[in-house]
Image 1 (tube, rainbow, N blue to C red):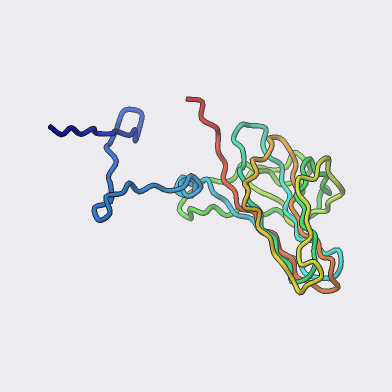
Image 2: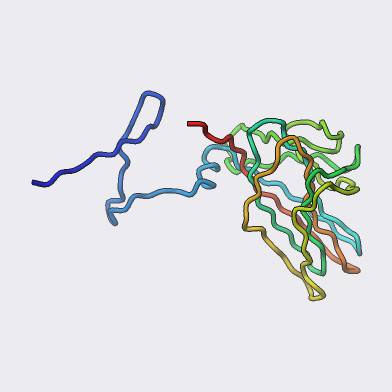
Length: 198
């Protein structure tokens, strides 16, 4: 005599449903957690481009809020010439420099905004923004630094490893040109998440 077990999943505090399998392959379909965050309206994107000679910098800076809703970030930088890519923690940024940028929510129907704060107004900043093009004067810790292009015509790198950023901390991610004429770009894609306790 055959037996079957029905699995139920919670879809609300007082509701459950049986998950469905694909009718053609009889497999259970799932999505990655990062994909889920897009659907939840918690995935964001920010970017900055700059062009010029040696020392030209594309930079995104921001302060994380002093809460346990942490940013999980992946960075990508590009340059058409030799450049240095750095991720700096506890960064010192120039007050009143750069421009505020509202990160774009990947769910274009969502009204959610980021909890990150800009640094152009100082370390207190304003929630809902990051800063692009801000002056940078140093940091307590270099989390990552590498050369891209390395004397060739150009290069790019993407940090496949996710960084869970420290709360109440100023960060700067940047790519700085080492070539006489170049275009540099930095991208930041991240979701904001509070760890579950039960």
